[in-house]
Structure formats: structure tokens, C-alpha cells
Image: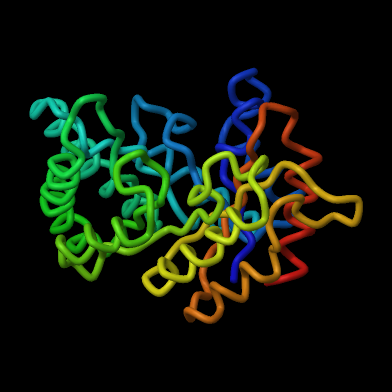
Length: 267
């Protein structure tokens, strides 16, 4: 497996003007990761394709990989024109991603609208993915659905979407703690879903996340058995990127460094 860092983890630095994607790569090199995942808001929106290529070239010079790009899509919007805009945006970003030599995109389902029919929202998501998948296949990019959004939160629901879409380029991106809302304050019994849901989800994984932020005195994750989680992924045959994402709003450098050291113990 590859130890990776999301630029989203350094959102505080980006928001404060303390770094851009090129200087983030220098920080990633200092941390000792293998690769990085790119948050789309950190890309120059005037020419995202050219900027992504520049970042990928610089990463290569540093001995790093840009392993994935976050799509940030919402395919469940009730307004048809807004959904069409989301589909066209996804198609464009598939092209930007492929143009930079990146083969994975971290994608979402969408967000529940109060009063809307959840079953209809799932149908919208399926239809939208059916529209974008031919472009992904053409560019040889895998779209990996993260269990992130409020439509289809659990593994079985997202696997249903993937089966309905029926494309080999539609995969999963397990983010284990997303299966248990407020995992930091839940008991051990509730947190068992972190492992059981990930096990369901991992067989189709081409990208994976691990939320970090709080650690024990000996450097272990405060709420997740990281070794057990990596064994769940290995048992499913997974050997790809594991992207660290920092939760909380503090300075990222220290906890991200601890996260890299933690993950190195188990991959």
C-alpha cells in the first residue's frame, strides 16, 4: 500500500495563504509520504488542466505520485439543470485528471434534500454516473465512490449504485470512519461498523482514506485500530493508496506527521 496525504488536510494553510499546491508537495516530501491526493479548490480554476499537469510534473521530480483527484460532485440535486452542470463538470475534470497522468478520482453520490424522496435521489445518482462513465472509460480513469455524502451512506447502498451503473471503471473509496457519524464520541460497539462496513466495501476499492487527528501517547489512532483496519483492506486484496485526511481545524503539520508515522507501521 502507498502512504498518501490529501491536500485537504492542509486546508488551514491554503486558506491562510501559507501554501499552494507546489509548496504542499514540498511539505508532503518532508512528511515522507509516497503520494498525494488533490482537493479541487486548491487547483487554479482559470486553467485546472495545466495546473494539474504542473503539479504532477513537480511531484514526479520529488519522487512523489499524484495518486488521486477529488471530484467534489453532487449527483443528487433535485434541479435537473444543476445536475446537468454537475455531470458536465465531472466530465471536464476526468479530462483534467487523465491529462495529468492521474488514474483515480475520489467521487461522491450527493446530498439529501429535505423533503425529497431518498429513492428518487439514488436514481438521479445512478443516471448521472451512467452519463459520465463512458468518458471515464475513454480516458482510462477509475471513479471511486467515497462513503461521504448523505445519499447512500452505507456500503450496501453504494454497492447497489455501482451494480446498477454497471461499469468496470466505477469502484469504491472506503473512508472507514465515515460509516460511523461522530465516531470520536461513540462507544466500541458502535465503532465496530468501521470494520464491518469497510469489509463489505473493500473488494471493489481502488482508493482508500483514513481520518486522523487524535492520537494516544504511543502514537496510535485514538479511535481506530489501524492495524486491524489495514488487515481488513489486505484481506480484500487491496494494495493501493491509503490517503490520510486530517479532521479538526488545528495546524496540520504535527498531526499529519504523526499520521504518516502511524500508517508506516502497518502498510
